[in-house]
Amino acid sequence: MKLAAQISTTAAVLAAIVVITPIAGHAQDNWPSKPITMVVPFPPGGVADTVGRPVAVALGRELKQSVIVENKGGAGGAIGMAQVARAAGDGYTLLMTLSSISILPEAAKVLGQEPLYQLSQLKPIARFTADPTVLVVRADSPWKNLKEFVAAMRAKPGAYSYSSSGNYGTMHVPMEMLKQNADFRMLHVPYTGAGPAVLALLSGQVDAVSTGPASVLQHIKAGKVRALAHWGNAPLAALPGVPSLKEAGYPVEFAQWSGLFVPAATPDAIVARLRAAARAAADDPAVRQTISSAGSPLLYVDTPEFQAYIDADARKMKDVVQKIGKVE
Image (cartoon, rainbow, N blue to C red; front, top):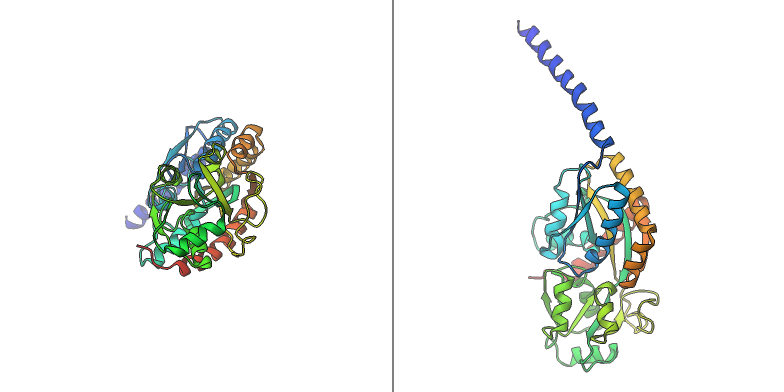
């Protein structure tokens, strides 16, 4: 009787596998059969949001389903990134994020904390932009160029402040790199995203900010803020005449890139369709125009090259974060 029961149980399990496997495959074949959520782990107004919204519209056209942007700010982006890292790998949760994705797990270790997510929990789809951050001050500030800015910071250590999207984020790290290299001190004031951080500069709450061109180009054109330098290694088409830090004698580089990710468990078939849709979105003239007009030229790379880029960036950022050290 016992043997018969075991045989019966085994047969039932095998039958379930036979039934479930075609259903799972069928679900992938029918994907997407409902709206998709694109998590942007920052408030509206930042680079990830500026890139994510036109890309979401284009992805929706390609996939014949709505792609809904959900802004999920907090912890420099870690809250939203962790949400996607823990999400089901069914293709219905995407992540449009910035280069801080490779910084924050290392920062948590420096702080003696458990990272909210690991890079291994996420699978890259495509990179859309890769911009050097830009140092800006209000137009009514006394500093007309980088030399004057650095001199003022050195003359009054800690008297001036800068805002960021959060500790160890893509607005904090480049400023810390510059501070170390140029040997000056400033007060760091973290906000929940680039949008609020830029508003803090415009309203006079802080004295400077380092952010992607897309977050400040409209304010530069409107004469509200002045760009003093950028963290790139080549001239910026959107900001002609603005020097790089390297040109000014500070060998510091930092790129704020934006990229699309999914949970690591997402099936290869869905990943392949997302890659094709992302490529089509990058080729869409409306997407290219929207992103470029915001100051972020589209620099698209597909999954293999993007993965190599992330790996190299993560190694570099690990060293940078360790040099910054513990930030309370």
